[in-house]
Image 1 (cartoon, rainbow, N blue to C red):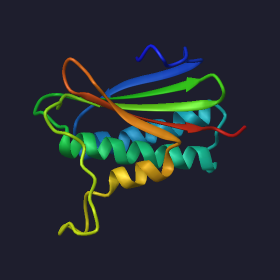
Image 2: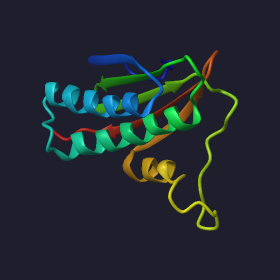
Image 3: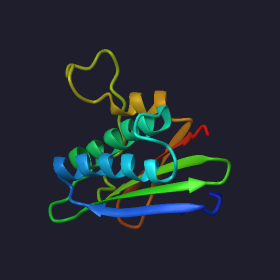
Image 4: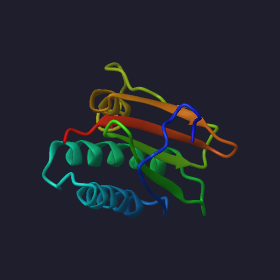
Length: 141
């Protein structure tokens, strides 16, 4: 955790297989955890968090995968009713890439654009092994 992050009031950390099934499970765990924290499955906050986790986990599985290594989902409920989502993968040698309108692949590569639109703020933190892509959203009461 970065020093500038406030001490969380609640936290979930889970390692998941770097497979499409692991990415789906990350999204389901997020929905269940936010419901437990008082943000029901059909709330805007829960829906936004699920979309963010879905994109970040899909990126970790698709671009950050190292055979035999998991990815990690971490949800932090911060003071001020802010949710910090962190998805860590073991692949540090690949930089994040935005797809522009001129790219040939019309079906993939727009996950970070969605993250930018949905998150209040987001970024990347390098680790000893791999990287963590994080996003924060405000949770309305």
